[in-house]
Image (cartoon, rainbow, N blue to C red; front, top):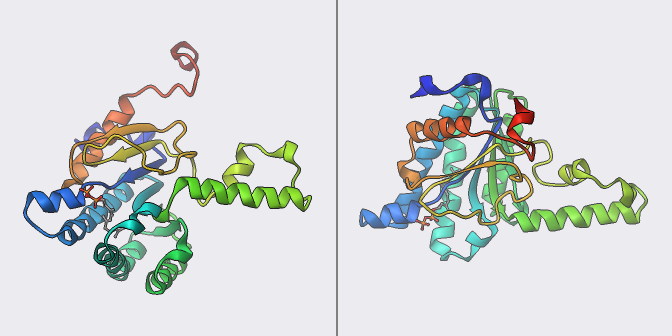
Length: 244
Ligand code: FPP
């Protein structure tokens, strides 16, 4: 299947809403925590496969602002998993020349997570093969509100004038400032919604929904999504004729 991927037309930025850990566990009569634990295996396989293929940017929705409303035990489990995954995977990131990045309201994360995250971000800062961005305590509306506030302050202090506000100004004030727009957005588990994820950045993304639950998501499923993406005509508002 990998041979069916055209490496000259890879999406530059893949974003994934990793969904279905809880249902996966429930189907097997296991605790939700075990679902999340198995979800980390899919994270590993997906990161590895993307890097191997030559994807430059991968962004994973690991924890939304709304996820804070889950039972405390589940939130604690997810935070613990994050710390342990970061500790365990730092070597893999280094060996594979992958840079870690994080977006979201990071100061609301528990101190331990914040510290570990920043350590790995600092250690991998110079890596160039792929940028892996974790969306943590992330909400797109919150990101937009924070951008609007920063831009308004700059207008008030005459740093920028309102006439000069354009897409690039907005882009620079988002958490994703250095990342290109998303080309391919994947959501697992059969749900077909965006759930407050990268609303601005997915304006022209191709959307791909699969029924596979996140812990079952393998490199084969990733290849399927990329092959499907490559079959689509991305017109960006133009006509087919204009493109050819
Ligand atoms: C969605 O499943 C998944 C999450 C809320 C968290 C994703 C986290 C991981 C895959 C593990 C840790 C991440 C990293 C980056 C190491 P759900 O709980 O919403 O599933 P459900 O909809 O079936 O209940």
